[in-house]
Image 1 (spheres, rainbow, N blue to C red):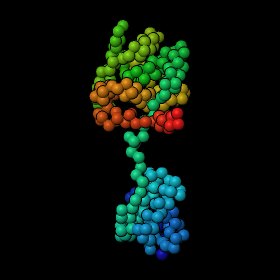
Image 2: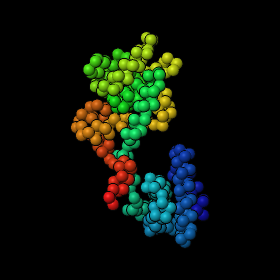
Image 3: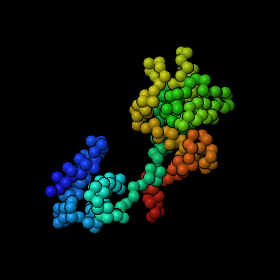
Image 4: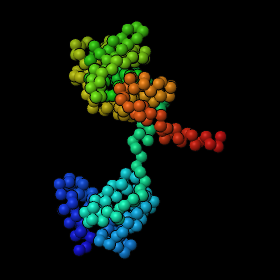
Length: 278
């Protein structure tokens, strides 16, 4: 039986009930592995553990595949080995581990980009976009939390303000202080409103604004919505605000998520090495 026939039988028997995309991906991975084996004098019935390890090494060093991609290829080979009863061929295979999501710094806005966003929205006569930007930057809301706000969730006086998030992630509510610049932006925006809609932020059609509309608006300024929340948290971390305080402001339930913002960004790393020869 040739390699193609073996792969067909594997897909039919071992992947029955799997999604078509999974079957297609595994078929492709095994066909590539079989091609490699053929060039080294083996096939899908005769390969050994060293063949698998050398193949994985090749993917990492010669083909420069990312760890996540290498692991997908190895997953297909492991499934095939289980099917043929040759688990020894994939025992203790060494592979570079993929970086965890929290090992890479989140994307936040640098000071220049943040200030450009503030200036450009502030220059518009309609104060809605400016108020949205200042609320996201000043209160660190998720966009889903922002669009759910009603007017009576915002209490503003001359010297302070409070924002009530009624249903945050995980169904948790929290009360947030509103910084002066955000209070100013919200006050200007609400002064332009002459309707009775209870929603704090409205679309151009006079209805409660949607998450997608906020995301599209921010994309016009060259930023993503999640970057504004990340920028809020990063600013607090850089100022040495205690983790417990940051968690209460952002609604994070894990200190690990806050620690994520202490990771250096690619720009931080680049600036660090540029100073080596100073």
